[in-house]
Amino acid sequence: MPDVLIDPTALAARLGEPGLVLLDVRWALGDPHGRDHYLREHLPTAVFVDLDAELAGPPSPALGRHPLPAVEELQRSARRWGISAGSRVVAYDASGGMAAARAWWLLRWAGHTDVQLLDGGLPAWRAAGLPLSSGGVTAAPGDVVLAGGHLPVVDADAAATRATDGGVLVDARAGERYRGETEPIDPRAGHIPGAVSAPTAANLGEDGRFRSAATLRERFAALGIETGTAVAVYCGSGVTAAHEIAALAVAGIDAALYPGSWSQWSSDPDRPAETGSR
Image 1 (cartoon, rainbow, N blue to C red):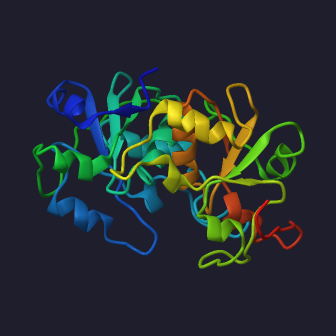
Image 2 (image 1 turned 90 degrees about the vertical axis):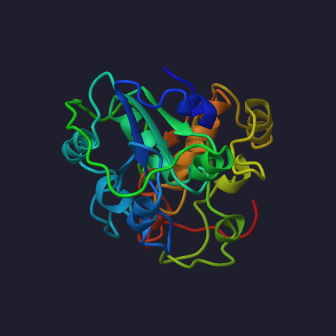
């Protein structure tokens, strides 16, 4: 399996290689204009990926704001992006991988292991003076065959017990949302009882690139997480939790995703919520 991350200059050296597929996954809460940003400028040959439409199923209180897509739908999208069995895939965004990590995780979950994140994303590419294109790209259709279940997931019941069964449940949202000081999106404020706070933003340095493996190992060790620890991660809707899983992978630690995350949990009045710091 390739490294989680690829450096902009290393990727630039591979542009034009057969089988290379670049995915532009620009998405952010409150900004519905990812495709417009893509059309203005993107990495050469990159295809646009619509996170809401292609990397998630229909939202509902019962499943959360970004439930996992049906694997048949994901396969259809992946083929449209140009992915075949031997493709090398690199996903990027303009937010340090916060959105692109969802594509990285989903493809690995569905059995396509040759996928990486562009470290630093579009800002790092631009800072390196590397070429950009504009307009849309239509890829030659791929023939990849996907099947879910290649990465671990937990449901709400398993998330509820992860912090008491010798494992660690990680809340990847901003600290103020974990503590319940604010909740701008979901029905209730707070966090899943027993979860520890590890905001995804701290996975990145000031340059927007992932911190070193050693630094990330230290960060997670301070939360009681090391190689072999049973870890599950959630966020608001299962998107930035994938970024936390990527950072854990850089540190050499495997983790499960709770796809429904707080958006599902907080919609169920029978599920308890804690506030404050643990």
